[in-house]
Length: 185
Image (cartoon, rainbow, N blue to C red):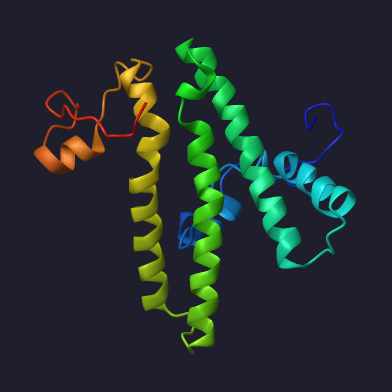
């Protein structure tokens, strides 16, 4: 669209935001991770929240309805991808669980931030460092729900780097790290 002159380069959102903005899960998804699909998955939330449920714009009910719908759509898109790669039960992949859990985590995170603000905690470098630790910890906990089914099915076979194996056992290729998570599938 830019090459044929219909749009200017500045009309397009940046593909990725700045990692320094990722000190909450909400900010990671809303400002850092690929932004190209953000409006596509947000628009149906407006339809459901404002038109179908008649929720007033700007209310928590409207905002969280839109949040959950956006992650439900994202999870469904990725779940279809899981199914096409794994060729087994549609529900066997972990994408839908992973993406809906992001909305749950953001909801909890927002509540904790609101309580902190009510308790007088202000934004500072220390608070942001705690936020980075929280965000990294959350993804270390939740990403296996999404990726473990792919690993078990061999979708990621041939992956040449293992951060966990490298940090844990010094094996950056992941050859000696053999463990599975009890995810119940």
